Image (cartoon, rainbow, N blue to C red; front, side, top):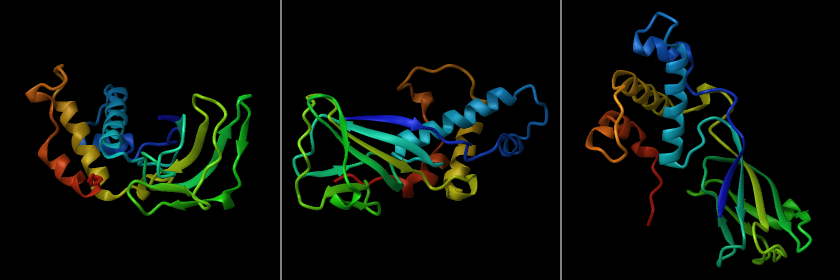
Amino acid sequence: MALKLLSGPLLEPVSLAEAKAHLRVDASDEDAFISSLVTTARLQIEAVLDLALITQQWQWIADCWPLNNVVELPMRPLQSIDAVRVRGADDVATVLDPISYSVDGASVPPRVASRSGFWPTPGARLNGIEIDFTAGFGAAAADVPADIRQALLLLAAYWFEHRDPTSAGATNAGVPDAVSTLLEPYKAVRL
């Protein structure tokens, strides 16, 4: 199974002006660095929580269907399923009729299931199944929950103040407790 970003967010959940105000920076000589911190903080939060903060298009790719015939998409919140395709032995993709499957965007993770209980078998041995979907809280920064936006600001500020390089897994490479606390309600519970 693979996940491929088709179209990233058109903006960040926190603007450069908001980040600079939070950091109390007036000069513009740090703008590129601050913008990169905001983007990196968004990417970190999205990766840790399996979230898309701002509307994004993704593609889930697999060789075969899960044993229970229910596909769990690894990104949320789900806005829509844009296409489900199955590739034949000739590598030609057939788009399935949306009436042939059900979508559960409320579950964590979001799910897609065949209405009949069986999906068409892909003829291609590798990457024979593709599901294009849209995920995110919305297209505007204001659509992202305030506590996630605040966590993003705190994380960017932490990295702004701690510019020294660290090794992955080092004790000083963590994130502030306040960031973790703000993001706790959005963690997916895994059983």
